[in-house]
Length: 232
Figure 1 (cartoon, rainbow, N blue to C red):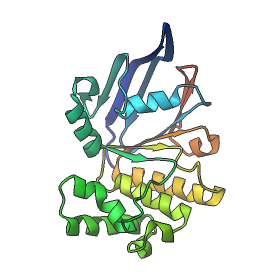
Figure 2 (figure 1 turned 45 degrees about the vertical axis):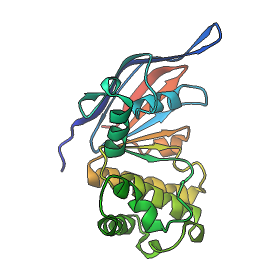
Figure 3 (figure 1 turned 180 degrees about the vertical axis):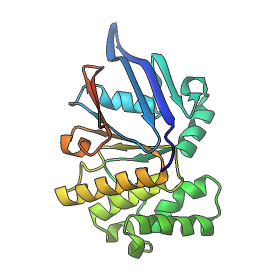
Figure 4 (figure 1 turned 90 degrees about the horizontal axis):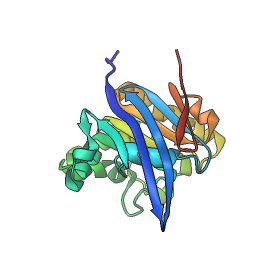
């Protein structure tokens, strides 16, 4: 079994937005720790602050105060170029919509992060095909996104997020556009890849059934972490 280590740590994260003379506190001091090989679900109603929290955790936004440390590096100390490199190297993203490029094959879509990271196309495609095999889509590698189902496209998106072996993968409502069966398959595949690669996984969702499969469930309400439930 892979030894667990802390991948991401957020401490007393606060985020304020200003609209005219009004200051809105979207986050009011949220803290969280995520370890390798661990699947964390952040849940909450619309407007609870969970998406703002996720954006800050993933480096897409910066806190007004507090710290976010990824792989022992304080994200606030990175300039925009360094932050972009850190996201490309250490973070994978799965969105509600698969966002596959229609003019690329499924294998080329999965290989894209590797190519952008400097890997030769032939090697990237070979690794992409292995990743597609892992999610049961090896037979779809040379097809176009329009030729696969919504569930298959989302599984390809999971493969793309994990192919570069990031330290952590964020999934924002990854099953929101799928039916129950396809959603279950994507959830199982996502969890499998987290466990087998040793990455950390963070799911942002309002779906309590999806969250139930996580190791840790963090509930956010009114900009505050109101509970953290960790499975034994």
